[in-house]
Length: 220
Image (cartoon, rainbow, N blue to C red; front, top):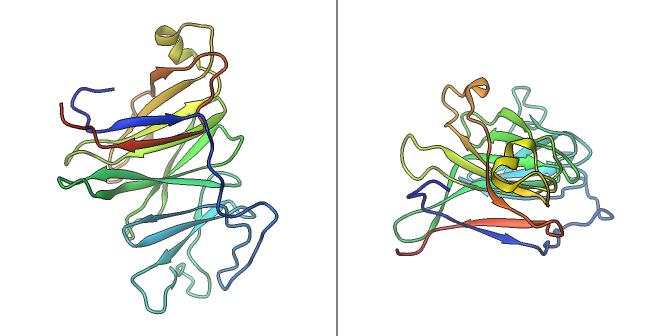
């Protein structure tokens, strides 16, 4: 990882149970069915709906609390993302007192998928800025918010098998790899100018990462 980056990346080989199961499905006023994951960012709750390739957004500042409306006020806002999203994360940063703060993005992926949707989390934007195609099965992901103005958000994702880009670090044989993708801020985002994803951690053949989290780095 880059020097001075104030985060530690924890990897776990044990998955955690989702709050909702495949057999439990409810539909509320927003028409959601099969809500597999939610994530809170800046008083907005992003919600998956696995029967639709989109996210809905619940505004916690409204009373009563309700989903943000679309340009057509008869419908809730829907953010198109990858097919069948069932896992969400947000950029997580830490202030001087160690409290976590949200960054500019949330990320969506689907089980068994090879892509990640990057969604601008600011209520003035709320759109998918790009889709990252990894070429390999993604097993986990985590993200760190920018550490300073002008710094990128940093997305980490674990792949079950390593791509060619990781062979120089990890070798051509073996298990998967954890990759790092730097992402500039949503203002003037240019997907064509994204830097390449870089390998940061090589896995043994029998190892698979099922969950990850970013933490502030301790004193050095």
